[in-house]
Image (cartoon, helix red, strand yellow):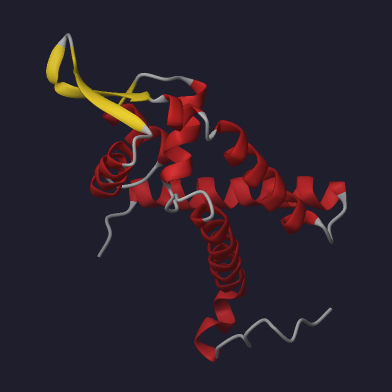
Length: 159
């Protein structure tokens, strides 16, 4: 099954077909998600922070950092933008003024259903040509690949 909209595999990626496919998939998927997020006046990654707060409001900035797997500066910048947009508040923790606790505002909480709807729509678009078994298999393979890459990243120093 050939898709003429997909770019040809460059020669340099010949021995990395899977990795190239993952890159192309991630780019297309994230690009579509970004367009959907723009319709809600959000930037990519902000929805991940909001979803963590939907599950448990009042997380520390460090907890959010760990949960979403983004770098410190990205999370800091996103939280600042979201605070300026009135979606959340940040205040020092009573036990340690250096620790920032993040809480949703009413405007932030109001995004729960629109974000859930966005992920549902993105899922429907993503799986429309797959069987339920293919979805399960792909999800399992993706998790295995992610774990392998993360485990390797923890073990090997980056040159």
